[in-house]
Image 1 (cartoon, rainbow, N blue to C red):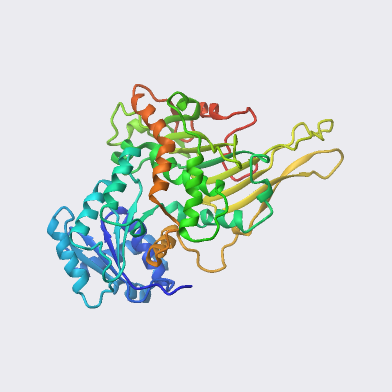
Image 2 (image 1 turned 60 degrees about the vertical axis):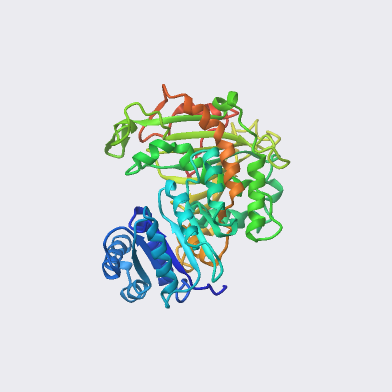
Length: 496
């Protein structure tokens, strides 16, 4: 393990939801595991008239809410000693001049700076410009790194504009576009599973794989994100970013080595190879819907239009499914189905890979009416798992089969040391300067190219949107995306 260089980790928007629930708890956990570099300083920028001590009490309260009885007093004291509060309003130009003085003239602060923009995307351009106006992008004395959260733009045009504005002041090497999905252990294990094992490689292609499904399902609704969600929708929120990233990991070729650029080169090749969806083909390749009233457990659930702050005539989709083809040698004519939705029957993320049937129906004259297909299932959350489904003979008289599941050890392992949370892993990467799990500008651009034609058609179809009852698995009409009657949505890791 390399020795991490000390840095000042500066969080803009430090009093917001992401900082409270993810960033500060993740940094605390890293401190508890002695993974943070010695000498790190965590500077939290906020508008509330607090000082260091008031802020540390607030951070303590947040950590108690998130961690509870597992909060270690000695570790907490050590962590709080590294946490500082800087009073400033990012809307004011003077804030950035004072921040520069604060960071550079404090003798206890390292000379390397991370700037984490835990802010609305509309603020990225302005903050990046004002950092640069005060030379906080210059690497004359230590490195400078800027971290931005998704969404990286609202559509292809907006993403290009955002990228251009950021690149005016920060080099690509200084930019870290974070997608927390890429930090999840099972997502990273997809890469190892594919390229560290020879077993499946001969079958990992169009000759043996029938189709691939990538699903992110949520029981939750829009919660307190009404304004953002109604302007974004499910396609922008999940498919353009998280699910397309999972697709690249499943479909990519082995990189020549493990450096960040080699890995990202192969992911971009996949995105470039996705067959463009023309305007006339949008309805054949995509489906959207919105949740209506329903029941989840014992609770009556309001429909999307009943949610607070949602316009009565909104046609924003809370469910989106698309069908993609990758036009390269390995995947030609293998459909990839991507699906996401809110207020569905269960919450989980998974990759489901279905293999073709054997070429010979050897058992057609036995009691076996139809052999179930083989599946390879990769659970992302909440159950992190790699599972294969095979057919075996049932004991007894006659020829009958049943599905058996083979689990990788990751399905049941609870020990084996500390497991990094997605944000913890990615925060360590940015401190270390590792771009492997971060998105490159052309990667973002090509991902937008995939969904932009769909967004343009949906944008003008504002008179009607199909609905599905909350607590269901979404609209039945989404099944029309499948190529064959034998293809159906895989909803969970259990045998079906």
